[in-house]
Amino acid sequence: MDVLEQVIHSLSTEEYRKLQHPGARNHSDDEKRLMHLLQLIHEANQPIQEDEIQDRIYHDPSLQSRDKLNKLRKRLLEFISENLLDQHQRQSENNSPHQDLGLSFLFKGRGKLQLSLFFLMRAEKKALQTASLSLLEQIHEAYLQLAFQLPELELDTIQRDREANLRNIEEKSKVVRSAAKTMQTLAWNRSGKLSEPESRKLQKALKKIGKSPTLFRSMEDQILAFQLKCAWTLQTEGHAAVAKFVAEELETRTEEEASAQQQHLFLLTKRAWNLKALLGLREHQSLLEETETMALEMRMFGRQHYHEFLFPYYHAKSAALLGLGRFEEAEACLKEAIAEPTIEEHLPEKLYFHLDLAQLHFRNNQPLLALQCVGFARACNGFSRLPLHVLLGCDVLEAVCRLVTSDHGAVNPALKSIHKKYRELLRSPEHSSTSRLLVVLADLNLAIEEGKEDSVPTYIEQQSTFFENQILPAGQLLEPSLVLSRLSNQTKGQGL
Image (cartoon, rainbow, N blue to C red):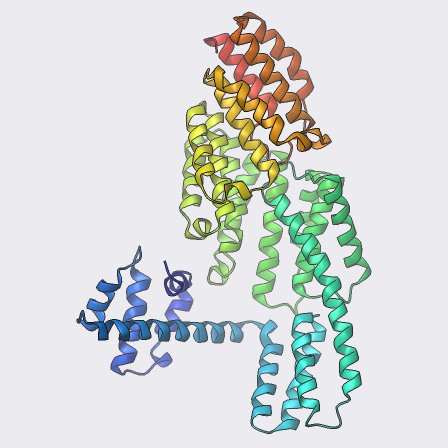
């Protein structure tokens, strides 16, 4: 699927309707072909061959018509781009300083320097109000260009303001980079716990935001601060405290100055964190109800932020269904998520859903299907770039499935490989339960190979006490207590 097709298939119903509006075009033959091409691509469920498009628009297979089609495709992409920008600039108050900056450039080009200065000053005022530092850099650059023609502008003052803004950009970017890494770590982390170094970075970022309120005052900054506050509350007080904090925030109205789209983005961010809290508390029925509420809200404003929250939505919904024992619905939910075009384009999220599917199959007494899901994930090019703790979780799940399916000859090599690849990670306190589970698996496999199956249930019962109330480490797919319970039941029932 090329860029034009991706853009067209990403359009909301309202955006597509406005592109089709008669006022947006004249009725020349070329314009009719433009709209015909838009309609063809929009209505197609899969990519259309170039020859078919050429035949349906020009009814001519010649190279000359192919050249015309290529030019038409370029024109359509430009038309859609300009129209989309126009639609969203009209809707979003946050774009008003950008519009003023654009007007400043326009009047400067016409030689109306005082008008250019007026709109530039207005853009600066709005950018300062919203702490739009990157936009301020563009404004300062425009001031410097204008100062060559307007002597009343002081170059030294402009340069001082610019240097101060650049320092703010660097300071803020450090916090944002740290926050982005934290959010990535927590995206598919069932426990929600960070390592000690990550927790210290999180605390440092929160302190920096607290000490620089004027630097972090835009709506985007408020959303960032909210997420970091949730993450820190999760580290220090747990999921129940996060659920309480988010419930209070959901009752709090966002600033009236923020645009409706920004308020909507903040609302969905709060919902996503509420899902994470309920998932950690294992309140599966409440979690499922919350996903239904979120599904409705994701469709607001022409599904403007729909794709940003697909991953937390599907992840939470499938986990809720799984927790309620509704395995078929959970499986259908995960397969629906994997089939989503947006998920298809984001490889890490697609891989995570395949691993969720592997976990589901294991819980549903289908270890061979769990192995197939992990095998499919491994075959994808981006698998090796997943976080180390996630790769560890995959290897552990495979070793467990080998033991459960009585593939005893493959268990010991798998366990040795895990110890070798993840030696440093397994030494960390966060993964002490995983390290202990690996020892238990090796002992069980050895006992079974030596024909000592009778001792297995007693050994499992002894080891189970260690894993009671253990927090599942980041990236791990199976709770040790679930693994031991499955092994114990299987041993008592039919032997491994």
